[in-house]
Image 1 (cartoon, rainbow, N blue to C red):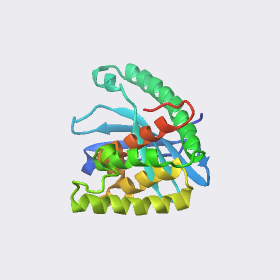
Image 2 (tube, rainbow, N blue to C red; image 1 turned 60 degrees about the vertical axis):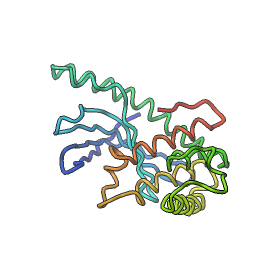
Image 3 (cartoon, rainbow, N blue to C red; image 1 turned 180 degrees about the horizontal axis):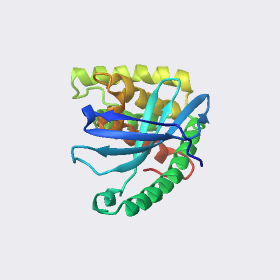
Image 4 (cartoon, one colour; image 1 turned 90 degrees about the vertical axis):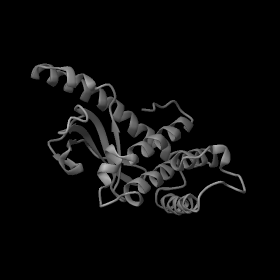
Length: 219
């Protein structure tokens, strides 16, 4: 897998964190074009060490999904520049292999019809309640939570219409919520890279791939 010479970067939280991205080749999932990036993330406020991950975006709806690589804290304790470069090379190579698996999982999602059981698990996790409470006629939910769940079901209907009646459509409903509905002050990237949207997206991804009929890898 080749990394192109197309690069971009920016800042998060007013410069407290910065990111740098190198673009990979686009991938087609069903009718969707996916933009893919190797991502490096660092902080200027000492809150975290440099880390690598991968970020992709569904072009048609501008939904971004970011995964941070684990176990890269060694950068904080590595003194020499040469050692850091070698660690970076190792992490990027490892990341590219995992990212390729992510694209395979997307394709499996697009080939798998949505089902009620997985949808219930995703919604329960997204809104913080037990799956067993999903079908209760009388819920101890606040009016706000009931309204939020209702709004998400509208998003889900729209995304299933756009992406197909598949688990890929379900996953895009979650990322649409975190990229658009949950965003404050137009800071979508912050939400999905280092905010609550990151956790929501990742949990939904892992729930969905755990339900796929073939062997897949969660992260």
